[in-house]
Length: 185
Image (tube, rainbow, N blue to C red):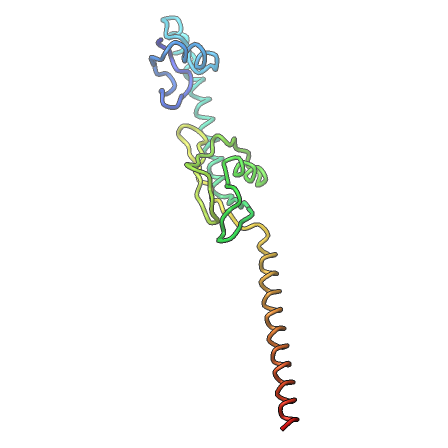
């Protein structure tokens, strides 16, 4: 089936290209979504008249995507997660978690546009690619941090305080034993 593309379609072609696709793909997806028209003489003439308008819309979408990519690059995102021994995450950070964190930061992105090769399973700094437009990709700076870092610091301080108190008690006990030994002699 020959079609005229009315928009850029990934792995298929650009606006105005005449492509050959399987009939089911064209009939059930491309034509109903408004991404293509059958490549007839009448549609070719109508498309030439419509091309400028479609190109202007495509350029507008690209410009918006570039602006959004700049906002994403300027907004670092932090995700706090629970960790176990050895800083191993309970679960993992997925594109859905990243989308929620970005929404909290004021940038709404569909989770399907966040390109993760595999879920994030350790703490650290990551650069995540986000596909905003077929020609525009944004880079998000993502920090995966330990949840409740202040609590762990308090535990360390309490342990240090307890160790210091135990040392003082040991010294006091040793001093008493020494005094008792001196009194007997």
